[in-house]
Length: 62
Length: 276
Image (cartoon, rainbow over all chains, first blue to last red; front, side, top):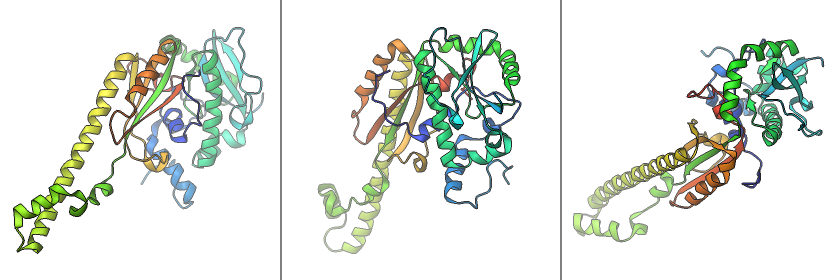
């Protein structure tokens, strides 16, 4: 495909697809990404990368 | 292969075509094909210490790890997209072993086949619209710099005597006008996004609207007023891209961005539903 020039894909565009799109299958190892709002994952990933004190987004919120 | 099984995608048998030999996936492991019941799962054996549930959860909070893994995942999907129309799975879909993958393929077989039929020969294009105007740029429109309209109002409203009161009233009026102008601009931005989305949806086979992107993450300037995905036959992609290109620069203050071609990430759910 050479229709558009290939630049490095922005992480946020990638995550829009990899975390919000794609078939969700409950594997025998269950990752509950499907149940977590994309924005929340993104923000938590971003925030925890700058602030170690932020609690895990995977624990039940409040 | 020992370790866990990370599954990227399901596709139809690739036939004589092969994946690039130098292709590496997540954890630096080359992806392999696992054929079962006439479908193929693209799989990497990944180490348990990184991909079993607890370490994986911890890793996913690490933006560097998430980013590297997402890019590795995408490079496999990208390579597949060149040779077939893969059905991508959600990032970090992990199974204990090959037989777990096979069981999953059996239970999902019908759905996979239906979806693969629907996305066969199609790719996904992402289109975003950003509105660039900001509150601050308008607030800096002082009476002096705004020229005619500002000074006309001062004279008709207050005359020369009560400059203080007049300028206060004038200030409020101006703020009101700014606010209105600001609202108008947002309305125009929404209208532009709606029209563009309608036009693209007519050309595309299917469309999805994603949540607007967070500017803190995208580091893009402006507010994201449209973040959409379109399913387009490969053969019609050039036409679609040209259509998007023609809208670029149509409206001052609005920026249109195109990404793709992607595998059909946003169209991987059952027909008529979100990919999720």
